[in-house]
Length: 313
Image (cartoon, rainbow, N blue to C red; front, side, top):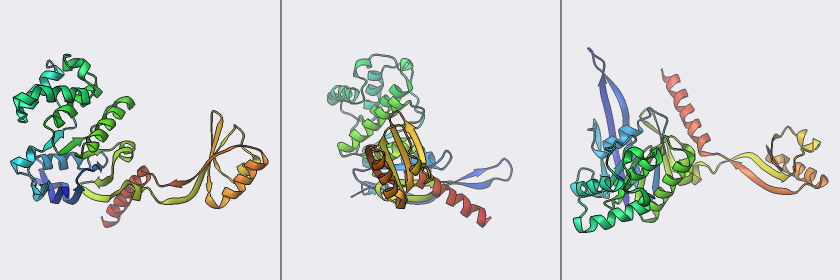
């Protein structure tokens, strides 16, 4: 079953003071997200990611198009009750504690009073804030605020969860914590749709991704498919700190770190490198084909879009 169907969703703003002119923020977008997957919505700043999420959440009205959640119209109140949302820059009242904030959102989202206390305790434990539930939010770090934000988004146990740039501004530990939480939501059977421009997080988390640029969809597919292309090169790693002259003569890209050497060579040169390592009695650690990264795919799509736009002007 499809969790999300975006059917030609479009948004155009009027800009200018006197003679207003149309400015497209999102061109007709057609997208499908399967139930139970983590779906990444990728793009540079200003690409239209936040606009899309605001449209899906009903915070702004579309110029055209519609969407369906869980097989029903996106405006259906029963669907709204199954949706959780964390905006890019959430604002919470500083002098509330984490427990008080979730109590407030529990009432707003219709969590029954008899279940609310137990549910809040469960969520605080899940997002790692149980020990600081009585601390005012003004004393929280950025990562802790993101976690309490995720807590309010999943408090009512929704089937669909939308996050807008959930890792933005976090340090590596905070990003890892948020990634773990999102992976946990997937294990619970929830569908997670999140926007980001941090490609390493998307590559680590997502089942599928879509790339948007200047309001237009530029790429779509499963991570394994997008990064499966072999570039005709192999990475060879061996133990030691020396680079045999015969390998250096091949013009290999070389990097020495601690007691290992890593080189990237054309695949037709790998036999020569292995023979050289045998002669020098150096221990081979790994030999791996170099595959296209998500970052490479992303950059290529954006460059192609820019080139196409330049030729049509």
